[in-house]
Image (cartoon, rainbow, N blue to C red; front, side, top):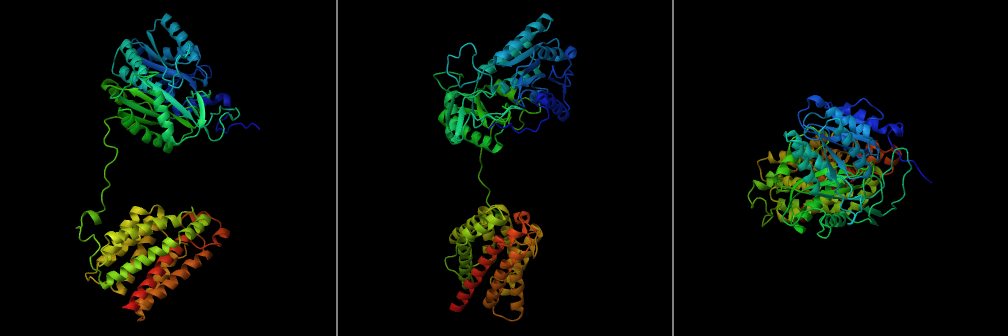
Length: 594
């Protein structure tokens, strides 16, 4: 059964004119000619033909490739863009209207993608404009590297590399160069660039049915930008493999598409085809740059990553590589007000990565203070036993915590807690200063911050830092049970303050708040510290279990129905109760042996 593609549009026949209306409402530097629906032309608001004192640079083609071409109209790039219907060349009348609107005495350069309809319509318009007295030059861009020579009279298709030619020509025109010089720079740029695309899906035209040409698990190599079939269909591969294939094709010495050899300076464009997430485009960019540098011996001077010339809603990307020299780089780096040219890509490239700064607790303290003591004090032995028991309890609960969290959250509570627990266990063996309780708690926080992601990691880091601050205020080297209780109370208060939860919100605090209350109560009543700790751990377990009866008021659980919440306890509370209970029992054992 055929299904019509889902589009956020009105009448499919009006998509181009309505796109233009939205574009000029968004960007005040743009206008359009009042000739809808036959004439669809976007121009610079500050460029009036009779008085315009620079070379006008005009491009265009069928719509459906947005932001190309209208998104590149602006000072320093295109002076006008001629918009055809979706995947259809603009009419001669539209092209002529654009030329007349923006061309002054310096003349006009037409940049045309190498498709038969575009060449014919722009060519006829150029001839008509010349007959009217306008100075016109034309540059045809054919940067496609997918099809092997010979390519017949059609030649190589114009693809995303055309956008780089727009920028070079626009910057040259803005610098005041003559028409012949602007055309010469644009022509040279067009000869320096090669492009190849890869698609994971077929685009859907407005008002038409979804194509099933490309089956599941397949990708198309060497496609154009109008929904036409690619050069080959292959099984879907990791992006590493795809990038290698595309680079080998573009830079092939056999086809000699582009005059790029080892040692050349190049710019790279990773272009999304319309439905590719930025994440995937950046992954492709991150894999392409080192391959160009290490495997092909090229100096990558600039990288442009984004959606520059699309094919409606097609999933996939193209790679464009352009040989660069200092003049071309200056043109690419020159300022422009074109709304869709990427900012932030100009200038020399610093190293991609730098060392991670060490936390102050590790960078400012001596090696001795951050190493495990050669001999543990009695307090050090107890602290080590408590930490080891606590993290092992969490490690053993990973699957149960994930199972509970899959019902009331995002299913990763156990995995997150496991990462934190294993990091604490590893770090304790290396450098925790166990004879110093306050500093050990601080280092636990550092381990958690490094290893645990999500909200849990932040909250536990806050917990540890607040406890550390309270313990550090004590000048004695030995920490009393009362001081531990005060540190726990301070840590809970900090988590509540910054996390926004309190008792009854169905969070880890529903385990820790009753534990803190009982610990303080039993110590005040005169119980010995290990007994008070164990009794408070029972309160923690009871508090965690009671979360089954609580409505969620924080975190992802707050979006889950009460019926589902009643079937499981809060995973965060259960994890907190588990490590607290294990630590308490370990302390009790240590005291009994003493």
